[in-house]
Length: 292
Ligand code: FAD
Image (cartoon, rainbow, N blue to C red; front, side, top):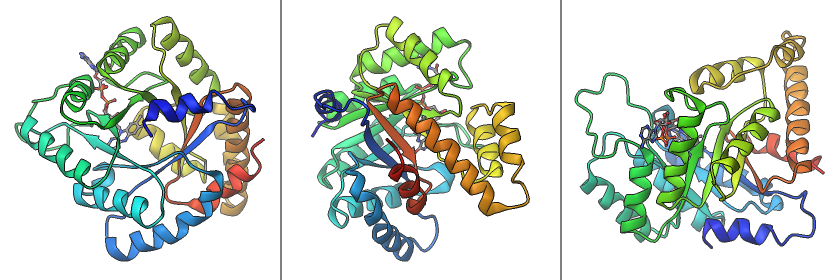
């Protein structure tokens, strides 16, 4: 089923407060065979939430192209779930992207998150056949039947000169054929609601799905927000740091915050919630069991 149909179907739901749930996973970097088999076993516990799809990161944290595809295939063939493969085009020639699209379609992949990616540090003379993700979306649309998602940034992308330009650039991806926008993580729902407002004013009318990374520790979100340019309110920082010397109590407080965050999003009738699982499925169960 195409991404647009997944979210269209959700619009017919009687309980508008039940968002479409999806998860992000990453391919293990080392001992791929053993660890990915374990991951497939562990993913069983989230099936009860009927995830619409499981997205598999690409390149992030040094994971390889082959491992992303292989994990996506395992998710489809062994776990019986729908994979969405992330793909970053920076540094790839058009021919290489074309070959990759053929490879993944032949492997039965139907959904892709089309990203530009970050320029790897130290890369000499990177190939710029694709300068921005909108060019990739256009290319995928012209050369495949893949259903396409793209990234959005509730606090604007780090490189963007200003928010309005970032939204204009987001619209380019939508006009090129994206069917859903999945957002960068954020820890203040008001930022997401402001983002939705801006996308609507810009005439973007595809689903905008909030990306939520459940909090397991302050250290974890401090590191990730620095990397991706999201913010942490002082009040959240202080709330979490009260539990600094007790990891279990920190994780409990973090999950409580994330539950409230998801509940507020569901109450606002968001179309979906995309959970950055960090491959920690038991935490996802704890989070979702108490939602709604
Ligand atoms: P773009 O949409 O191309 O935007 C990048 C910047 O260029 C923005 O500042 C934008 O305003 C500007 N811009 C865009 N188009 C134009 C244009 N036509 N003209 C001028 N300026 C323009 N990274 C990974 O390496 N692997 C992953 O698996 C991964 N998954 C992600 C999943 C999600 C949901 C998100 C939100 C991010 C993910 N990332 C991942 C991070 C992403 O690769 C980086 O944020 C990257 O810097 C930007 O990619 P993009 O596709 O958003 O780029």
